[in-house]
Length: 382
Image (cartoon, rainbow, N blue to C red; front, side, top):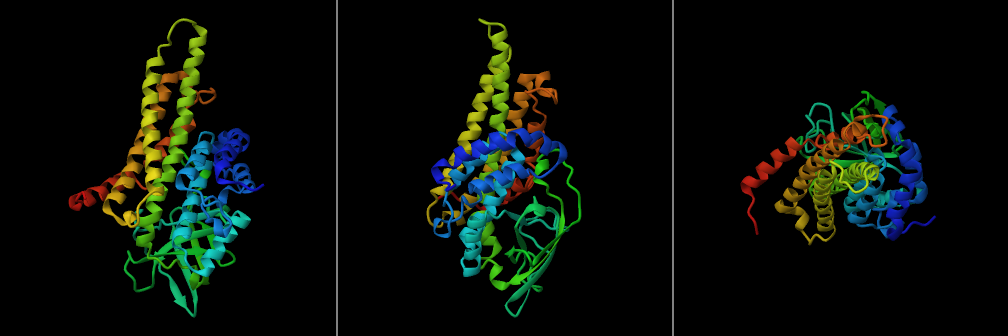
């Protein structure tokens, strides 16, 4: 089928109902890759949503991609997180991969529906995105790279990995580049296990990464520019859409529970009805925050993505959205009571609550607040 931007949300929502929903609990229970859902997304052409049209993709906006992610997250947030992280890598390549090798690979992503993963964490740097120990070794138009990655989400199932490293053996830890690592010049050796409370289907253990290839697989922009202008704002927006879908699932369960209670006693208002109304208010706050932030990214003016205010805004989105998510799911649990606490009830909040608590840990909120604190010490409003 030939997918269009206008029908992408509807197509992803159908995949969510047909593949993600019936497999979500098993994916969570077994901590397994949601192969049925990802295969469905590939068959529909969804993995090329952010590939530019001239390279065979849809050229979707971040708002459009995010809307489809939220629809998927209503059924399986692990599947939605995988789609969000793939879109993030495509966005980085589309914005910063300006040579023939990288543009050809983006066209291959669209044509073959390749799944891209990320290796930005490294053992020994304390989770600091802007610090690398490993270094690129370049010679004769080729490169080699070895990295001990603390986490590579769905690495065993990805077709390629974008990895950060120092630009050379003598470079400072913050002098980084981003490298497209592809088979047959990519080898991943799993070094840790993945058995977490939530987002279990993302299958994100650590790996020893070894890669070699053409030097043109190294993105020309410094990683600091890629991170500030694309990686961080796009990740915060797309993750927030994952959390919006998850929050919507919790709200739907709470509403269905209260409506069921109302049908049992016609003419009377269930005890949790007022709390449901309060929950709907908080959910609307989250939805407005997420959609407004996505629109700001899509409509940004030239140079705005390099401003301090831009960074503060999207850092704050991440902290606010992840905090609101936990509040929403916890409120929904309180409304459903024991029905929400039971693992076998149709109103169970178990998986939703466990996934929700992962939101504040992915790039820890404390680290982001620390970054914002430093920015605010020198920030001046224009």
